[in-house]
Amino acid sequence: MTGSPTTLEDATQQAMTLAKALPFLRRYAGATIVVKYGGHAMGEDALAEQFAADIALLKQVGINPVVVHGGGPQINAMLKRLAIQSSFVDGLRVTDAAMVEVVEMVLAGTVNKYVAGLITKAGAMAVGICGKDGGLVRAKKLERIKQDPDSNIERVLDLGFVGEPVEIDVRVIHALTGGGLIPVIAPVGLGVDGQTYNINADTVAGAIAGALQATRLLMLTDVAGVLDAEQRLIAEMTVAEVQAGIASGMISGGMIPKVETCIHAVRNGTRGAVILDGRVPHACLLELFTDAGPGTIIRR
Image 1: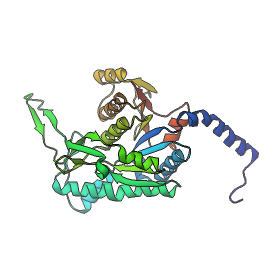
Image 2: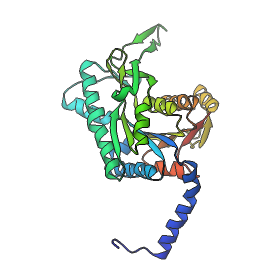
Image 3: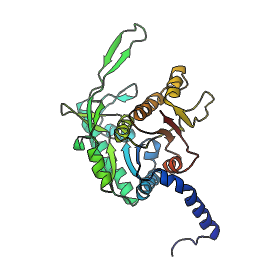
Image 4: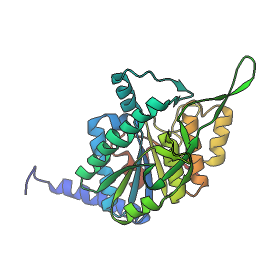
């Protein structure tokens, strides 16, 4: 035996924790859980290693985790090194031909292999892929309409090679999970024209969760979840309540596209989509294996 000796009190606490977790382990046995990973949880080494260990644990207890990751800060760092200027419209990076090569290199290369490597190091077998592999994510050019606030004239925004999913072929995911592997997916898609498209990671995670009929979509963010007018966390919402929150202005800003992703997922078969703070230690485990989940779950 190595390490510090375990007292009877410590051992008893561990046994109680396992006993309390058992009903949740039964609930999610064989379930597919899609996790969108990004934000500060990805940027801090200790949190990243903890996240990887938690994902490995999910696989080891009979759950099928599927990880979709972002990488905005890493892309920004590489663009800065290459002296390539970038701009954003409504939170989306305008992506020209030169930039899409950098985006693919960072997302499908450096970041993807880093995340897969951490999970593998934690004791599971993770495989890094992107949406282009096996035709997993078929994409089309994203079109956005913006209204001029002064003239009310609408114009189409050209975001370059920014795309949105039009079809998800889950066969490659089933092949990996069925073989005991954890797919780690970079949000880069392939257009019908053969063009590579940069896609928002939240959007890809929601589309994949719906296509897989996932039991849960866990959206790890840098906020606690959806807050009410008094800035208190809302534990559970229906689609109708979310839509009412958007209409009233209670849900605003960057939270709107996140809840819309959740709505899309649950309408397409995901049983529940959760927005939670990825900076909370063991956020995924707390959400799945306790009654006091730290985020906001959205159901139909």
